[in-house]
Image (tube, rainbow, N blue to C red; front, side, top):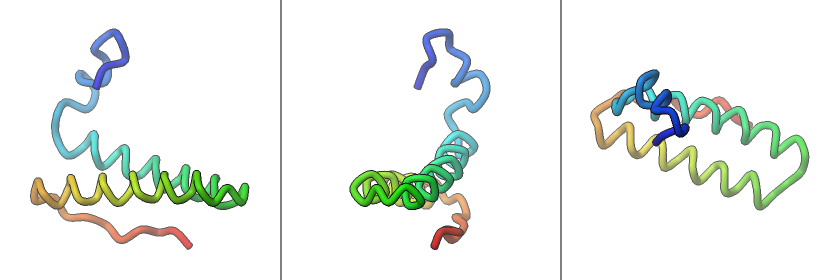
Length: 69
């Protein structure tokens, strides 16, 4: 992943921290989409959240349970 200036790789590298950050942000985005009653958007964000969790599990990283309702 790159922001055009290489900053994303510098900040998060290619390790679990970047994926964990993405999963955290996806959880927050899911709450916003759910609050807006955007069913399809919520579903797609939730699928991305789950995929991030799977990526962390594949790397042997402990995964938190979602704090979503």
